Length: 533
Image 1 (cartoon, rainbow, N blue to C red):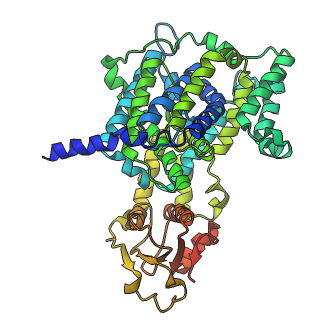
Image 2 (image 1 turned 90 degrees about the horizontal axis):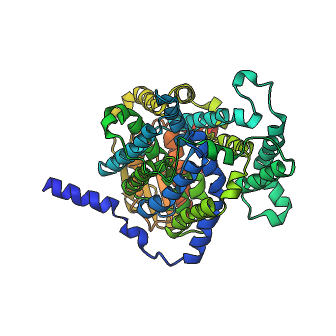
Image 3 (image 1 turned 135 degrees about the vertical axis):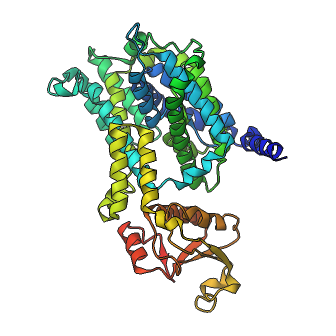
C-alpha cells in the first residue's frame, strides 16, 4: 500500500497536465514574449556555449531543448530554461578534466554521457522530494556562491576581451579586439541610460544592441579577429547533429561529476523558481520542475548540447513581457531554432570579443548586491561562511563550496537545532492585541507567534503556518519569544513581506528586541519591516 501511494504521489507531482490549462488564453502575448526572450537569449546562449568549451552552437541547442522540453514538463509555467553561468562554468571544468589520451582533444563522449546522467539523476531527485531542501540553504552560502560564479565568469572572458594568449601576457593585448570589446562593454553598462535618451531604442535589450553594435564595428573596420563562425568551424569535437549515446560502461567514473552537475542544475533551477514565485505571487511545483529539467538534460546529452537549467534572466524577462502560459517557453525555443538555421550567417559573423563583453557584464550582474553593500555590518559567522564559499567556488569546486558552506552553517547553529520550536498562529479574537490596536484591527487580521531563534533551519516552518491564510488584510508577527534572528531568516521575511504587499496585506512586527532591530537597520530594511504600530 505504501509503495502504491508513493507511486501515485510521484506521478501526481510530475504530471505536466496542469501546464496545458488555459493554454490559449494569452496566446498572442505569449508568442510575442517568447520571441522577445529568444532574441535576448541568443547572445547569452552563444556566450555560455563558448564559455562551456562545447562551442556556441551547443549553447543555442541547450536553450532550444530547455525551452521546449523544460517548458512543457517543468513545474513553473513562466520559467524559461537554457544554459546558465554556473552550468557553463562546471562543464568547462569537466572539459578540462576529460581529455582523450589518444587524440589530445576533449573527450566529448564522456562529457555528454555526464550531461545525460546528470539529467537522469535530476529526474530521480524529483521522485524523492529532495527539492524541499533548497529552502534550507543559508543565505551567506547562496551569496558567496553567486559572487564566486560572477568572478569565474569575468576571469574566464579576460583573454577574449583583451586578445591575450595567457594572463601572464596581459600587456600584449590585441588592439583590434579592443576596438570591439571596449565599446561593446560600454553599451552593456550604459544601455539603460542610452535607451532613456533615445526612445526608439526602448524595446531593444542590451545584449542584442551589443551584438549588433560590436558586429557592425568589426564588419566596417574589416578587423582580423576571432568570430563565432571560426569557433563553429573549429569545433570538430562537437557536432550537434550527431546522436551521442551515453557510455554506461564508465558509469562509476562519471557518477560523481554527473551528481555534481545534477545538484547544480537543481539548485540553479529552484532558486530561479523562488524568484519567479515572488514576482508572480504564486507557487511553483518543485518536484515537477526538477523532472522537467532532468528530462531536458537527458535530451541535451543525447544531442550534444550544453546542460540547461531554469534561467533567472530569461524567466524574469518572460514575466515582465506579459507571458501567462508555457506557450511563451515553446515560442522561445522555436525562435532560437529559427535563428540558428535561418540566420546562421549572422550568428557566424559575431566577434568573440563582443560575446566576452556581454559575459563580462553578466559576471558583474551575478554578484549579490543584496548582501555585498552591508557585509561589514554582518555577524562574523556570516562573513566567514560567505568568504569560505566564495574562495572554494573560485579556486576549487562549485558544489564542494555549497556543501562546505552548509556544513559550517550547521555547526555554527547546532545549538538552535536542540530548541523545541512551537510556532503558532492565533485568531485575532483570542490574543491580547485587540484592545491595544483597536483602530487597525477593524480589518480582518491574523497573528503569527514564533518561538525560539529564527534561523535558516526554522524560518520555513513559520512561513508555512500562514500559507493557507488568504482572506486577511493585516498580519501581525509577535516576536516576544524570539531572542535573535539570522541573515537568512531576515531575507526570507523580506521576500514574504514583498509577496504579501502585492496581495494588499500589511505586515507588522510586535515586541521586537534591540538586537533584532539592529539587524534590520544594519540591513537597511527598516522601511519594509514595520516595527510596532
